[in-house]
Amino acid sequence: MITTSLVSSRTAATAHEDAMLPAWLDRAAYPFASHVVALNPGRMHYVDEGHGPTILLVHGTPTWSFEYRHLIRALAGRARVIAPDHFGFGLSDRPANFAYTPEAHAAALREFVERLDLRDITLVVHDYGGPIGLPLALDADSRVSRVVLLNTWMWPFDGDPDMQKKGRIAGGALGRWMYEHLNVSLRVVMPSAYGDRRKLTPAIRRQYLEVFTDKTARVQVLHALARALNGSRDYYTRLWQDAGKLTRFPTLIVWGLKDSAFKPHQLAKWRALLPQATVVELGDAGHWPHEEEPEAVIQALERFLAT
Image (cartoon, rainbow, N blue to C red; front, side):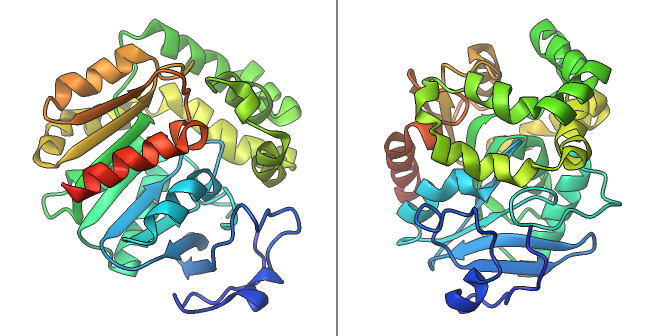
């Protein structure tokens, strides 16, 4: 967590900022200048690299903008690449009175986009980034121009007994205990969702584990989203009712087929909604295709951006 204000200018720099970054942060893997914007709930940290058309990268749980480091490096030469950390995650503030539901994160992201006055956005969403970020594309006067979906969703899990069961277990009392005392989402769920868990190296895992060494934060931030798998059903229902509006955007879907969380039948749901979308299936990748097979994802993005 950053506890001292960082300079939020895009030209601001590095030595002064580096002194305020946590000692565990791998600056070789994540060499980007840090920026902070003051929003109503608190200060949101973000990366802002490159120049040109805007690409907004929206992460899920239990990660932060570090998960997009390969994409940021590759795309900053052709675009302005922006990757915020949701409140409670990464290097952003963890306000005590924030709800940490997808609805609350979506409202904060909207404020972030409006505060930076981002327009003509290529919106990239992963995992919970879907229900957090895709509302930006549903607006009548949307600032979004293209959409990229990475193993994500925006619908209620009615009729999906596997996801409903996961939501009941993770969101219940046992799940809360496992989140608080075992850090289960980072130590168990995340490795299990990789196509090849050897790709989740100890060095990479540390960049996620260090954010949640505090047991209270695991409940406050991570378990809140576990509860929301079923608990935010009405919110997902409203999003899905408007999902047809996504057909107006050029869309790229990149899907890791070995994902233990979001399985091929959920990709089929996107295909049915967005028959015009370009779909890239990665047979050996799991839930984090952009971490597991970054070159394949980068190539798909570059082709998509060029059309």
